[in-house]
Image 1 (cartoon, rainbow, N blue to C red):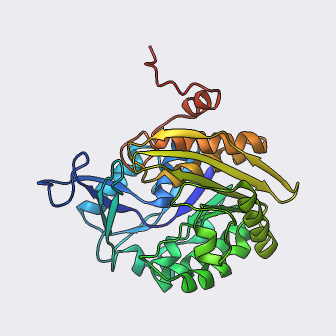
Image 2 (image 1 turned 90 degrees about the vertical axis):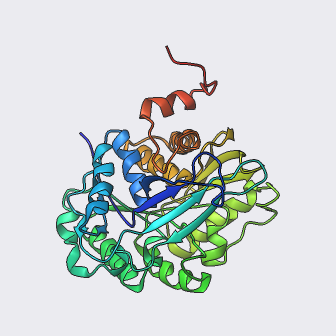
Length: 343
């Protein structure tokens, strides 16, 4: 039986230059859609779950196209509110080799940023749900969105729903100080926290020792300490930390770690060396994989292996969405990463 999972956040129109062209070169832009929590919902739909994505979109053809893109991949859009001023946009110029990718946001006054409490009937939304997921991007959009996220977390807990959060700090949206205040209030409702090598430091001031992310040096012991500090402060059941070693914009090493606070045990995935097609949505695909594995009652080691393998595959796919099946992820977990043609 498929499980009902609810995600809440902003989905935007993504306008990207063709191939690896720079903005100044491009004579046209390609249009798709994407956003943190929507990306997670698409992953879960591909794995056979029943994800519901909650947001607010303008009542115009662009909002219609956005909804159609979600429905195409099996995401339920029944709870999406309509209205407001506009759909947020982000522009992408993909990096290559030593040139970093560049993202430019145009999301001020988006429909979701101006959403009101009456737009969402949380009791109905969480009826029969097993899981709720949000990211640190959503409460950063506006004070109203921060309150809506808090309302959602409270309603989820009232319905006995497990809650996960990807910290996803965005310096272009708010300061570390504001992020720490707002996210700190939300953390009391979170069972599973997902963070990367920067988030815990930028949001909560918790830094991994002996780590240089720009130099590609990550310390396992440092991140074990980070996970334990996060649990000590907020009482999470599990903390997952993604470990990205950026060799260049085109080549990354990718692994992850899971801490189970009840067992006081750490689990680390295998490491993948990736040649990147598109890294946007990489963290979201990890979150989707982790939620799927946890709800499928996988053992902890299997959970972190599935999430990491799912995210590894996402880096090979254009766009925000991770368009892979659970079987494809499991094949990679078993060691089939050769890329040979499947006949």
